[in-house]
Amino acid sequence: MIIIIDDNISRALTNQSILNYFGVGNVVLKHDSYSGLSLCASICRDLDFVIINLFMDDLDGFEILHHIKHISKKIPVYACSALNYAELIKKCHQEGFSGFIHNPLTFKKANEFLKQVPSKSRKKDFICISD
Image (cartoon, rainbow, N blue to C red):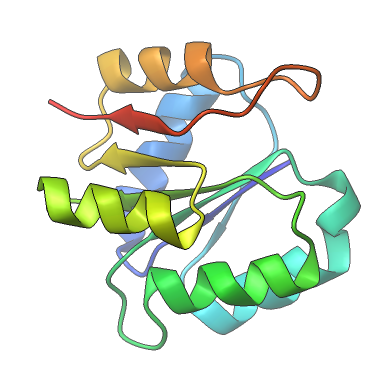
């Protein structure tokens, strides 16, 4: 299962559709931080990964990341943002995100991302998907 936490409903639906196109089933959308965190806590053992918009109204992505890591350090968490600059990507890496995806997600970026998402047996390197 994958959770996308993003308060931009149309972008979240687009990202879900693109992931579904590539055969990724069971992508759950949450449009606020707290419902996303609640779902993460209740199904943490079944999660493949979480994608979080970095800049939302209630909690920012860095705060959400720290809450998720408190729930389980094993859940891969990927940041996404329309902002795409080296300092932000570096901060995402330093804070413990598993990777960064530059919004908007496109078919090309989704394909690249899904090829790089590590299996449970492979080493987990930071993934950066950008234009």
